[in-house]
Structure formats: structure tokens, C-alpha cells
Length: 341
Image (cartoon, rainbow, N blue to C red; front, top):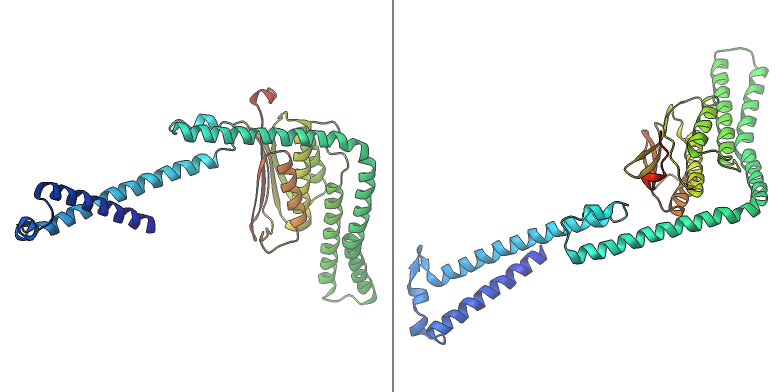
């Protein structure tokens, strides 16, 4: 609003200065006898001077409004282009862009693509150098697994055993069935914790399989052990080794979070190719969480974000309390890399 008023005042001043200079050129310096006609002459029942001021104000307002709309439209167009600058087909979307802006955005897009390639290259090098310390990491993972099993599953199984002991010491009554149901829930939760931890700590992600094969094996294995339904659609897409490894780990992490925290009845996994992007999407209808206030799954979500950034792809995590969670990762790839069906 301040910018609009400033433009209006400047234009009104310019119109006033221009009109004053013309009158001074025609009638000389302002004197009462030569400039009196501006007050005496009346048009539309108002002095000529007032009419000139109104006309100047109208022209200033119209031009200011036009300038503001033009700037806003240009700003919106530039904003849309900047938001798309990370996309691989960005150069095709700049048909109606000024040459200077187009050049700057192309340079930015080229820089982003270069950085993405560098990130992927560095990630590949990292995977290769990690082979020498796999055994050490496996030992650390096993130790962490033992600690988590002790802190979570063991405690829940202990609670179940205490409830069972209480049942055996009392006579059958109306509370027995409730206690049995409670024991069953505790044991089921313990089993889910165990499966989630084992799923999270597989030392070798794909075992020399493609990502599509690894995801299918993972889902088939889970369907035999979990209490919720898993729907999936998986396409065969060829990516680099590091991209496949990270995407598989992301899928493991997301499913592990679902097992441990979501209490979902349905889970959907998609791995598809669309518009030059390999898209991995895991969605559940569980409890969801508040990203700002709920810290129960922050560690897993941080791992997902770090792995996505590490291979230069985009990701989003959307969760609504009591409705579910969506984890989506998009990896650019060349169309020639995709295998024919």
C-alpha cells in the first residue's frame, strides 16, 4: 500500500510540474492578471484549476494502478519460475520470459543440477568407501538393537508376564477377560516393536537385488507378520546404486515408524515413474502426529530427510493427527535409464 501511495504522489507531482511548466511557457511567470482565468473560468461547475488537479489525480491513479498490477503479475510469474528452477525440464517452461531473467534462471538451474550431480557423486563415493567399515557398523547396530530391545520390548513382555501372574493367582471373574485382552494388546505391541527394530537394522539393504525386487520382498515379508493391510504398486525403474540404497532405507524407515507409532490399519506403498521422476510414496491411515509438537518419530523422520538430501532429491512429509502420514520422495532420472516393460 505504501508503494502504491508513493507512486501515486510521485506521478501527481510530475503531472503538476509538467502542467505548471506548460502554463509558464504560454503565459509567463505566475501573475494574477495572467493566471486569473484558472479561477474565473469554470467547467462542470468548478474552477478550471480544480478540474486540472482532478484530471491529473485521475491520470496518476490510473497509471499507478496499471504499474502496480503489471509489477504484481511480473512478480507472480517470477515466483512461479523460481519455484520450478529445481525441475529437470525447467528450460522448457520459460517461453515468455525476458532474456536477462531467463539467462539468470538458466544459470541458477545449471548450478542446481551441477550440485545435484555432485551430491550424487559424493554419495556414491561414500557408499564405496563404507565397504571397509561394514563390520564395525554391523557391531554397533547390533549393540544398539540390544539396548532398544531391552528398553522397549523387554519391558512390555515383563508387563505381560506380570498380568498373567495376576490372572493365575485369582479366581475367574468378570475382570479376567479384560485383563486377558490387555495382555494380548501388550504382547502384540511388543511383537510390532521387535519387527520394526529388525526392519530398521538390516545391515545390507538390497542384497544385490533391484530396488523394485527389494521393495516387493520387504512387503511380502511384512504381510506375513503384521496386523494391517499393505497395498502396493511397484514399477521397475533403474537408478544408480546409491539412489536405490537410500530409497530402500527410506522405505524401511517409513515402514518402521508406521509399525512402532502409527497404529494403522492400512498402508499404501508406491514406487512409480512419472515425468522424469522416480517417486517413492508411503502412506498410512494411522494416528499421525504434530510435526512441531510430537517428537516420538523425529529421529526416523530426520534420517529420511538426510538421506533424501544426500542423493539430491526432493521430499515431503505430511502428517495430520488422527488421519495418517504421507512420506514422498522424488528422484530425477533420465528417461533412457528406465527399463522397458
